[in-house]
Structure formats: C-alpha cells, structure tokens
Image (tube, rainbow, N blue to C red; front, side, top):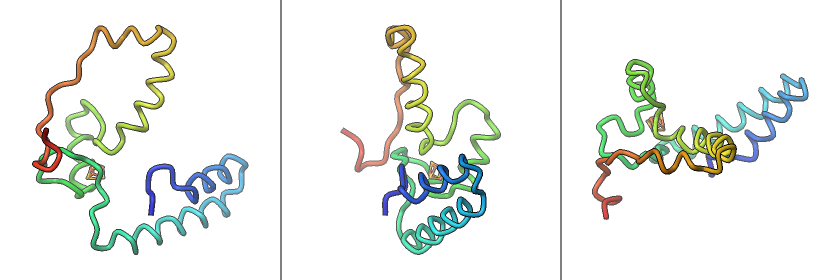
Length: 111
Ligand code: SF4
C-alpha cells in the first residue's frame, strides 16, 4: 500500500473540495482502515535518521511542535513540492544561498 499520494486519499480530498463531506470522510476512513491493517506490524515511517523515536508519530510530532524549527521528516516532500514552485519565482537562485545540514542516518542509509 502506497501512503504518499494514495489514490483513495486524493479522491477523498477531491470530494471535500466539492463540498461532499460525507463521501470524503467515508473514503478517508477506508484509507485509514487499510493503513491500520497493512502497517499493523510494518514500519510506516520514511525517516532515514538514526532516531529513537522512529515510527513513534505521537512523540515525534510533539518534539517538532515543541522546538518549532521544522516539520517531521515525513512531511518534507510535501513542503518541498510547494517550496519548489515558489523557488521558480527567483529561478531557483536560493539554491546558491543555502546548504542542507549534515544528518546522522541509520546504518542502512549511510554511504
Ligand atoms: S511523524 Fe515522525 S515518526 Fe511519524 S512518520 Fe513522520 S517522521 Fe516518522
């Protein structure tokens, strides 16, 4: 089961945007039920960092809400998609002004 860009969730959002709240909620619950079943015993967290809170969304989100610096790792692609669009406004020259920080990854993701 694909989480990012899941078709059922995309359909749910389309229903919400059309004002069909009940249909949106129904599709959303179908997605959540599928997710619950599929990820009962499987890792759902795409974060590659060496972190003791891996997959523990409750504590991970609380930590990010508390320090207010950035969002949980799994949210990066969503925000980067939007930032990329905005970055086009300056022909991506912001790339010359920034550099991502070094991150400590889990062993399987280290080069
Ligand atoms: S909220 Fe944190 S723990 Fe949950 S999936 Fe995202 S990065 Fe992983």
